[in-house]
Length: 363
Image (cartoon, rainbow, N blue to C red):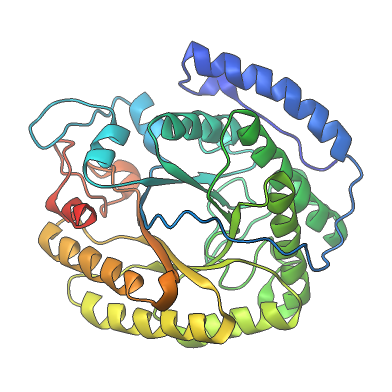
């Protein structure tokens, strides 16, 4: 097995109760991993599954940096100045779903399997629906970077496909053993040109990219058939990009449940980009019959009123899709403030309190 699970618990801030749960779950997962060894993925059409009957419209937040921020001394306050758990503040602002990125073996452990489990347990206990965003990398995967995890670096293409299956299956099995079945799972992050380059680069190996998507899809459904699988592309306004990616996946037999989008406008462009994004969403629904999720949005925190207007508008546009084909909108890392990691597009001010931007999720 190419995937080596590194929980890295000594590097993370985890309560004793959760640490014990992780240790117990790791023993269970070790048995599962042993049972999966040698599994060969056959990316054939998986069994037909039905969407969950839950009609929740996701008003979500990606808070993947949260535990690292807390370990660095960051604190969070509601609009009255009362210190609270960040998740509680987000819940009070109307957020009902949490998105968490998953890296394979990251430096220092943040966003690795143990950290994802820690945050997922907290989110589940707080009553949130959960999305897991698999990057299939040790670090950021996005349109410019789709770097293989170090432990997969020398793998053959067939072994890479198998590793996508096994890693996805193992992480989701660990979550399920802790009572957490994610509502949604992304197979790759902003895969505009595929994933796990160069093997899964869509512009040169669209067939391999499709097999990787199927490996993740099949693994998620094997853990729980209710999990909805997302293929996520950036630039939600770019219809030609979306047609190119999803036509290619469809013609190569890939399977997915939801088309995911990112949308990053600024105060001068949000109205035009929202309109273009709506046209693209409508075309995706018509062309592929798939539901839509806006997996990432943000805007500069320097203009929270414009950000609120943008968020309200894109939420309403997603809701306007026919037959409840629009599933939700997730803000990417709203909890960031004081230029955390150089990121200036959060939705908390420099006193650690939510800005008016988040009021859009209360509607």
